[in-house]
Image (cartoon, rainbow, N blue to C red; front, top):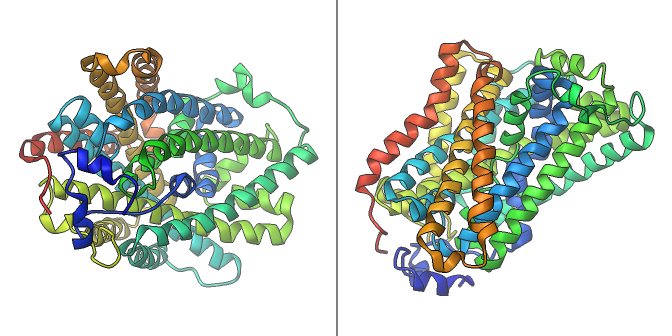
Length: 486
């Protein structure tokens, strides 16, 4: 039995923990390290470096892109302070929507739950597209045939389906190994770039006002925020955490700080590696499918063997990313089913694997159907699939965090006994987080057509998907109930 049993006993909104034996609730023994691994794997360092960074540089503000990752990390750290302050008072897994339910109300919480499902499903499908392209690019590089990207994407989906069906600790081990390897190789590459001085010597041109404002700062901020999607998993896995009261706050702060600094430093290293004057051209060539920015940099500073290693780890990073998002989405649907918003069978737990097995299967089918649609439409896997879905996911993520910060403010406004002596964490930082998120939302919306690569009409349609999801969830939330009995 996990260490959070007592908290569940004390909370009438959560099913009886004794039902674990009957396969009704989730359990586990994940520590801080394991959860950080899950979150960082969802952030997919190599995926962001290989996909988001070229997009941020190529269609954003060029060499000034590293600043966007620092801005995103600062906003998320402000957000995390209020998020962590409220965590002990939210006894239910479900992350953002549980916080909104507690702070604003049941119907708003259900609306946000649907936004989360849309955001995570969008980024998962987007990564499947990127993975399909990357595998085909690798096969062709080594002299293999040119195979349509959906073939590889569906092959990965099958493997994810098998792992997602089983206990979460198996997925955590797979993600942990992949994460250690990919972070390790990037750290080595960064060190070699800084050690050699890069293409033009070490400089801070990326952090000067003229460089930062040389293009659209909104685009790199959007892709920087996309790089953090998944850090919410620190709370999603609370039922499977060893000691939620300590594990969740630690994992949240560590994840945001490590991810933010890692992205900013590596993005800066990539600018230095190619040179301030040439990096935009390299990024644009990558987006046009004429080269590969990450692998080209690896070839230059790690040699051919290093390039091959980075190539393999890029593929494992992409796979780790879709697996982690699969686990998060499956748990969202599991909780929604136990609230009566989805069919009851989705809320069942596998008797042997202690996993939300039915929910996992449903998510597999959902992702497969969307991939089929994109395959039939013959969309480009990078811009058409990954770029557009990243845009939808980021819109959803900003809405999720904005509503959660508002929930923190409302919650502690009602509970004056809890905020005494904690004004900074319960009022000040949530307000600052809201301001930062509103500014981020404005930048995302004003640059959305650049991100999706589509017309204003298509971009508007994609941008409204999370909003429509919120409305549907809000209306559907009227039928939600407290908890299903085991």
